[in-house]
Structures are given as structure tokens and as C-alpha cells.
Length: 617
Ligand code: F6R
Image (cartoon, rainbow, N blue to C red; front, side, top):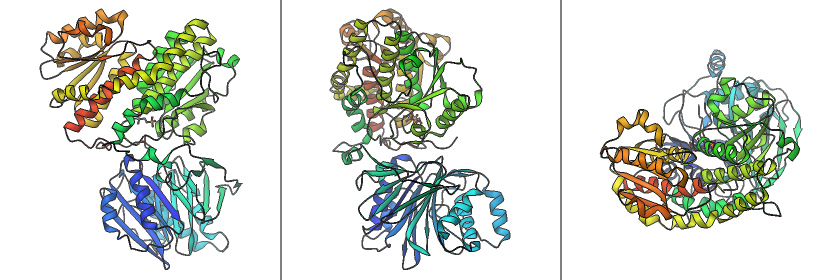
């Protein structure tokens, strides 16, 4: 059983081992605990599996080793069946006819296994994946019709499966083919010149080809070096529609940075510009989006907006709530996707549901989308990954255009989501009561965003020096009011995720109602004290924690910096329009967490226990 793992496959003339290992290492950020590859050489599977990093597997593959011209590879993140070489993928069928890699969960694997055991099948792992590959072999051995026997056997096996899967299968009797299939687990085919690739994530193949075919749920494909044949589980042939990836090769390399996370933090002036490009009206008084699939008239009828998301994306939704309620006066609800899907929430007829997901693959968010659609609400997605499941299943949406995010902890995609939220607030605001002048000022503020973010990034070294003073603590509180509250939540999440310091985000005043019990010289507090209208209130909260001997670091506006002389550490950010302040204030928090994690020697791009896209409940 494998849930948050990666799949790679290749058929062609290139060095198979290299293509598979390179693909797996580009997907390492997704989180895994074992890795394996298999090739098909002279009618036999060559199988290599190792625990731990892809590097351990690469060490076992001699570059001169000939693995054949067709192969599959996998990184596994164990859910059921412990971390072991025998549970790692690829899994080979009992009689050695098939090799499979699998992402997802086969829920009814126990009953299928029982049946297969009765039929004489032997098992050598604890995985549901081995059950599936043996079920394929079982159907293959029963199949009378020699034409398409490989594809048909995979299809027949999958018809018995309850659960989710992305699979790539090799057959020793069909040495030029890979058969793939998907249900709720991403899979795409890369089309090269006389070669084909299979991957669960485009970043694994973008250095080889930008031409891709996305497989839809319920589809299977037979892939040779020059041909793709796609069909559905119900035998309906499907045209392979090629798309071009808008990612660059350098997007998936470190470009001289020590970590992807630092690179991605520093890319924000560019990613924010990308999020806004082409999205302002000609008169520069409002924003426009190509993919909403709703007319201005329909959008005017919307009387409530619901945002569903997980983790960092959920924090971005909380900022969206402040923005849309403030600028467009439309009531907004924000819910965790995992809660929404089981909550049976009553909503007004004209509710618009936004699903926000960087990866577009988070299972809980996908389920929230499906639940909202089932109830008949209009659904739109905000996502970074073109062709992702959430992008395709929603009725329309907005792409972030942040480029691939490799660091597991979200950074540039969070600020892009807030930027899109600000543009949505502007759009809805202008549909309602926001004046032309207010709209024009809003647009000008957004246009300044990349430059303001760049100014904060220049403070990198200053922030690193401050981080050094906090790296030894084990607890920390992040406090902010209004739209700075979600930023406090995000600052605390970043610190937790990559440095393993316990941190909590809280509304600054709410602290008095319990959290303050934690405040002491052992528990420093970070305040977001940037908003002029409520500055006095936040300052009172700062004094409350100072009186309890807590060390304080405050993010403040440049104009106010001198009045914070009594605070231990101050990071001044440009004084900007309310609509872009949460983004500008996020940058120092990302850098603060990054440098603390670095000082503590943590594995910043691949924090323990975390995966980039969470495709389990
Ligand atoms: C935190 C982080 C996660 C994700 C969450 C949702 O740094 O990256 O909390 O935000 O797993 O992922 P997406 O946005 O891909 O749905």
C-alpha cells in the first residue's frame, strides 16, 4: 500500500536506470521511505529496491548496467505494511509475468487476497499492491483472446478493485509496452521523440519533454515508444490530448541555492508577478480572470463564498475571508476540506465554493470539491498545477502560475494564493460598491507588490542574525490581529514544519484567554504589529508578554520602527496598502523559519513525516 508516493516509467533508447533514478530524485520532495525500479531485459525483470533515499538505490545501480528499454520506478511512503524491502515497489506477480508500481490504496485487498490464495497464489509482501499484480496475473491466465490481453487483464483486475490507484505495469510477454491506469491518483504521460515517459508529477520528466497527456480518472493506457492508446474502464476509446507544460527546466534545479525552500522564497517577486500577469482590466481599475466560467451577472448573484482547503492553503483562505468581506462585503466562510466533506454544512442557494490547493491533488480537498458539486454548488479551484485532478474536476478556476514548488513546506505558492485572493476581492468589490478610484488604487498597490517583496528579501542577512537568537528555544508563539492572524498561523506552521520547534499562532488579544499561561522567558513571542488602525491594541499585547519576561520579535512598518525601541528584535517592512500587507509580512516569517531550521541542522526541503501532496485521508 502506497499513498503519497511517486511513479516513473520509461520506454525508449535512453539509459533506463538513469531516466528512472533521475525522475525519482526529482520527486523526492513528495516524501517516501523506500525506492525501487524494475526493467525488463531479455524476457526477465531486473529488480532493485532499497530502503531510505533514492541515493541508496542509485548506489546499487552501476551506470553501465543494462536494464533494458522499458522500466518503471517508485518511491513508497508506507501506510499499511511496514517499511521494508519486500514491501517496497515494484512488486512482481507470483509467476513473474508482471511488475507493478502503485500509488493509492486498494481497500478490498484482503478479500481479493483470500480468493487468490485459494487459487494457489503465493504472496511475499504485506502490500495491497502485490494483491493487485496477482489479480492481473490471474485474469491474464484466464484470458482467451490474445489481442490486447495485457491491457484487458489490467482492466478486468481493476474492475474488482475498491479504492484509489495510479499504476504502471510491465509485462514480460509484452516487452515494448507499459500499461497505466488511474483513479484519484495523478498520472501523466510524457511524449518524446521515439520515447515515452510516465510520471505521477510533471517535474519528473520536464527535463526530457514538455509535451504531456494527462490521464483522467477511470482511464487506462497502453504506451509504446511511438504510440498511446487510451480507453476507459467501460471500453470507450479516448483521444490522447497533448498539452504543453509551462515549466522550465531550471524550475526543478537548485540554481545555486542551498535549498529549494530558500530558492522558492526568493522567487516570490517573480511568482507574484506571474500570478497577476494579464489579470487587470484595460482601465486598470479591476482584475479579470479567464477561467471563472461565470458571467459578471452570475457572479453578482453570489451571496456567500465558501473556501475549502488544508494546511497552508487554508491559511491563505482565511486571508481571503478578510479581504472579500472588507472590500466586497460578501460573507465568506472558510472550512477545512476534511471537515467540510463530513459536516453537511447548510449553505445558501447562491453560494460559490472555492477549493484552494497548490498541488490540486490533496485528497481531502478533492473530496470537498466532489461533495460541493454533488450538492449542486458552483465550484471553482485555485491551484498551481495545471491538469491536476482538482483543476480538472472543478467547473472553472484560477491557476497560480507559481512554477513547481519542490520544498515540502509551501512558500511562494502561499503568497500567490493570497495575491489571487486580493485580486478576487477587488473583482467582487468592483462588481458591487467599490469605486473606480478605490479600484485603481488597489491595482496600483498590487503592481507594487513584487518590488516591496524584493525589498524585504534584501533583509535576509538581518533576519538570519535575528533567527540565530531564537534557534535554541523549543516553544514560540506567533500573534497578530485581523488579516495578520492567518499570517501568524502560517508563521507558526512554517517554524513547526521545518525546524520542529513547537509553535502556535493566535489572534493577539485572544492570548489573554488562555495562551498567556505559556508565556515565560522560555517562550518567545513574535508579533505582527503592522496595522496602524489597531497598532495601540497590539502594542498593549506586546507589553503583556514583555511583563512576563518573554523575548519579543516584532514585524512592524518602517514608519513605526523607531517607536519599538523597547522590543528585543524588530524587523521593519515597507508600509503598504492593506491588500498586500499580509504578503509582505509573510516574507520575514518564511526566512525566520528557514534560518532557524538551517541552524538546527534540519532537512529543510524534506521535513520528517511530511509529504508534498497528501493523497490519503
Ligand atoms: C505546509 C503545506 C501543507 C499544504 C497542505 C495542502 O507548508 O505545504 O500544509 O498546504 O497539505 O496542500 P495543497 O495546497 O497541495 O492542497
